[in-house]
Length: 196
Image 1 (cartoon, one colour):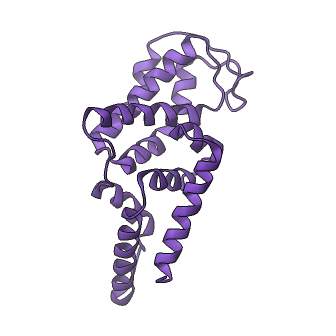
Image 2: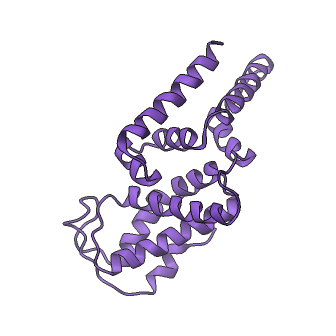
């Protein structure tokens, strides 16, 4: 994997972000700020992009571009409030721009399903458990693929720990449409689980 933080470290700049972002100490340099945010958010950002339909290489490219834009954003003296939501929003907009070059809505890719299946995988199942787990994965795969793109993305971001307001920023939607999208996704998955 590309070590983005080392490339940025060659650019000296001192950014005092203590007043804007309480999680970042005031005396950190730009490279230290980027490295910290890169370590905290890169994997989740790539996972979100892959789940949105980007292949692995595209997700890494878009995530790196989002971090380059973060560097420019912070070096330009702009505030560093809620960097996580800012990064997800920028990466999502970059992904949407790539989609506009092709088709309107990206279908959920099999790669996206692999991310979900890793979370559900039992470390040492027996034969019976393996069969049940396989059936559960297939059911969940079909149910998740049945959600709209907004529902899938909102649910994924919520599962990744983002708050509704952050998800709204990332997806460019209002607060209540995000709440409704997550509610619908959970309701649909619940109905599917209970065979309604």
